[in-house]
Length: 389
Image 1 (cartoon, helix red, strand yellow):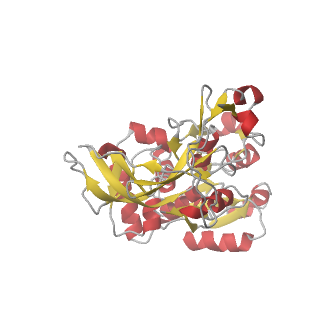
Image 2 (cartoon, helix red, strand yellow; image 1 turned 45 degrees about the vertical axis):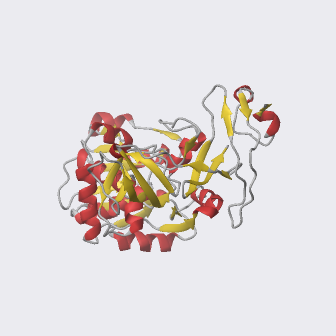
Image 3 (cartoon, helix red, strand yellow; image 1 turned 135 degrees about the horizontal axis):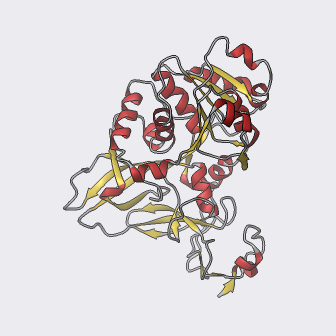
């Protein structure tokens, strides 16, 4: 047994003292892989104490398959053989079809998310699969049905698996596979934030930052379906005209940059659209502060992310003279507190009507997972990486 800091000298993500607590298992069967993935199958490494442990992605074939374990999202990522669990009476055997890479997935790998799966674990919190076989006591799904995770931490980056019935939700198989694969996180978050914090009426407006994100694109479409107007803030970038065109095609009323948000010209914008009653913040820092300045009195800002890694700063005047409300939202907690099968039904109906589409996506074979992980962490990313399984 060797210390990780001795055997993985390039490991910079672990503090020195924490790294000394980690041991690594020697490989049991090295296997080279073709394509863009590279790497090898190995047992991985485990921690004797501390919270930093490896995550595995699974590429399961027949009763056995391959998986990926890593030290950081971009380095030391390996495909790994894993065994599919035996089917129990209340279990469902599914063949995964597609699974996206979301920011929360990366955070879980890094050990910085609010929930961490027991490790070693399989990555991925979202995706869609098709039922292959069910246990004798299963009543909610049957072979051939499509299913999505009912909660986070299921481990969707694999080709097949056996899950308890209660961890899955059935979705109709007549919607596009990419819509189903990306249904349970971003559209759900967008829908609940629009519905739960302000009683919005047709003609009201909402302002949001990170409008090009998966949640942002869903907010635009769902708001449009209910007659709610949107002001969408994005960072300036080389392909800004192309991004603006895409967001407008989804139904955005206005698309502005962070720099424009701070200018007096915003007064002209509000001649054609009412000031927002709701602000949706995924960035934090100055971006959140500037959105607050444009809220109506007694308006609400909901924070559901912190991409800038900066605190939300609120002018005292906004509290005293505008009586604004600040709230937080985490979809994982909402799902624990609420029955959410009806929400999935409502979203699928919007998909059927053509009022909700999947975000801009790049489909990537699981063999090319390295490319997908790297692309998902690049700045100005507007295309969600989808692992095709």
